[in-house]
Image (tube, rainbow, N blue to C red; front, side, top):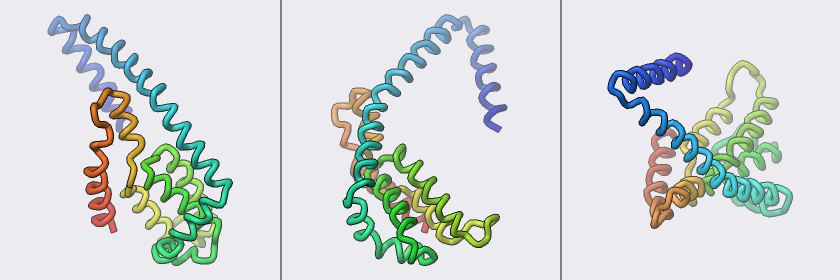
Length: 181
């Protein structure tokens, strides 16, 4: 669907620019946008590498085990099907921790790993288990205490107070989690 919509938007934009005499402005905005996108990507790369590295170090230490034990009652309540599988509990807790810290880029591969492990335990391979469905809902809601990526984007775009977004993010993610469950 998007493979059809985007080319249509592009053709309409170019046609409008040609007929309105703004082709030069369109060309300059294309190059400015790509330049801005590259700058933003490079600025965010450092933040992503830092937090992914911290999550990797944490996964190789006892910190994750302690946090998993802290989250264990919640995980057992939400995922009764995997009560005895400590590895899946660890993977889910790492994903939850990454989401809580606002590290969507680190949470995605961790979530995929947890889903793969849950699929291996799943009896019906062509149907999602209840635990898998709950996990998808939790990931979609993504309760965040520190919205790191949003703060980094606001900082890179020159915000005078990039952390001002924290409280509204708390409200939005809590509302999302409550309404999805």
